[in-house]
Length: 223
Image (cartoon, rainbow, N blue to C red; front, side):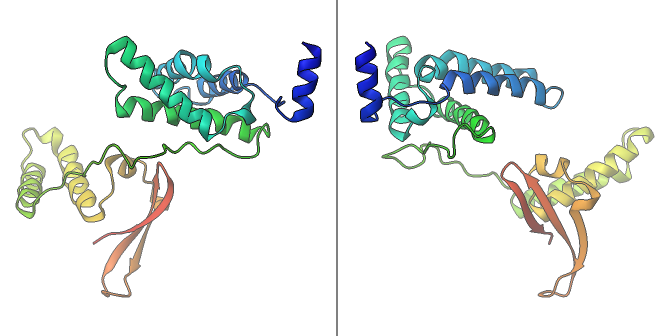
């Protein structure tokens, strides 16, 4: 056994480094502490379930440099075959997507700690996106109906004590429609994120907004 290990080490077949299960354990410890009070308990349970239920059993005994794009594709195939045996059908697209998202977050943990110097390629080979979705929108007639109803409620609330809330709702409808921001992006806005400017192209006074979304900070101009 010692001679075999020495031979593998000499030939470059035996890789050294931290195990995937060590990175996963550190990730779960960090996420439990750092997201306490900021993310729901359901989110944390999901991360634990995906990590300990699927990712660690398949990848746990591998050192991190061993986990290449090929190994991650083997994991996808393993999950596909496993689900077909257990349930008679392939896992849902969203299920696999969430597992790969969790895998990416686990790999970012050893990257931050200097255990690895890059992330493996986590993209799915051979196929385009399996899920194409289109964001819903209001027709001009539907939008007019919405803002007129919100304006009427703001001017004439069912109860006088609800007037302030009704006015805020009306402003919220107008703001969202004229900026195109998602509800979660809107709720994260602070005064420091919004600047009133004169638009050079139209000569109008508009809002320039620093949007803090799930992919970082972007910029938006209101209509």
